[in-house]
Length: 390
Ligand code: HEC
Ligand code: HEC
Image 1: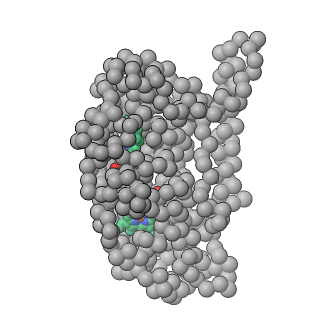
Image 2: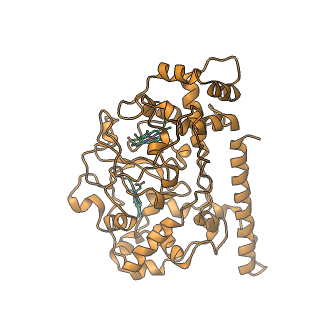
Image 3: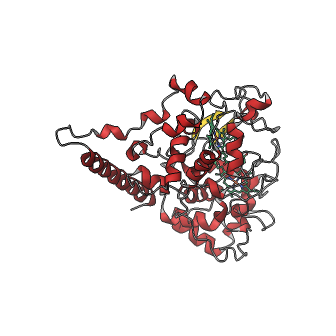
């Protein structure tokens, strides 16, 4: 059984558990003359549905409106993860994933043998590096290092969405002067000269084939597709375990999915991302989507995932917010709207929450944490170089 299958099976099982819990839950609180609930209920259209007319009232009123919002039934939250783009063209096998893991942590990939993918994407820091921004690339200002958790699900990669597959994305850090600065042919020759790598490539791609640059990016991508975070307290709650969230997190959940904050309309479950480019108005000189597409809006960025968000501070494309409470304050104040930014998304209009409610919202974000899929870090790289990335 390959990894993709096992991931799918796990998901199927979670869905099954969710549906059963829903039936049990509804059976226990309804009287027996009512019809058996339809499984349709698990399709949570209400959560992502466009704004309702009640929104204006909810936004302009004070916190009591929010407090009155009922916490949705746990199973209303059950979503199916989307299929992973391009995964079929590069099937996940344990051998390829293992090779990818070794490559990911090996500084031999960089021209000076000093930088690995993990230098910037550190597992313990949500695969980011704790710094506001990384070295600037040729044509764009320096940006915050993206998390790699659940990147396999993204249609668009990077803050401006310029890449659409992990395979093509991986070519950038390997070759950019500001990053690993290697040359594809030189890199292939280097790995070809390391017998342990030749063995690993043969196991992953079959023997008798020459080692290629495409195999390097394919293995790295296969490994990254296994960095899945999908069993957070939130997921267990969504699957029917009403005790998985604290009372505070449940209040935060109601706020997150409310017409007061609109958070879930952009950060939509289960990825808590969305494949769209939006202007929230973080103040920087980065053109965002406009830098890569003529029709792109200036200052629009790919809506990032919020899974494992507590691990990846500082926040935003330019790392300008040190903490989650600061991010919430920014949204509460109306985002870039208060700085007269053009084109700020209509969903960003500011809101009034009490101090307690803001803390509840942050507590909910913490419930999106699941790092059980952390990979094992090799003690020494296959090249023999030390694995030092901190
Ligand atoms: C010098 C630091 C650095 C190194 C080394 C590095 N990255 Fe990154 N990575 C970044 C930054 C910064 C971004 C965000 C850049 C942007 O959006 O323009 C990023 C973004 C990504 C993304 C996009 C994730 C998403 O969901 O949008 C992927 C995938 C990725 N890197 C993979 C890799 C791989 C694989 C390697 C090793 C071959 C690597 N990176 C090495 C800094 C680095
Ligand atoms: C209109 C769509 C939209 C809405 C509504 C929205 N966000 Fe965002 N969010 C974004 C975009 C786009 C970014 C990236 C912006 C940037 O980097 O400049 C982002 C970034 C973030 C980040 C930083 C992520 C990271 O990896 O650095 C957090 C945290 C966040 N949002 C939380 C929230 C919360 C909480 C709410 C509700 C109060 C919310 N968002 C509402 C679109 C939205």
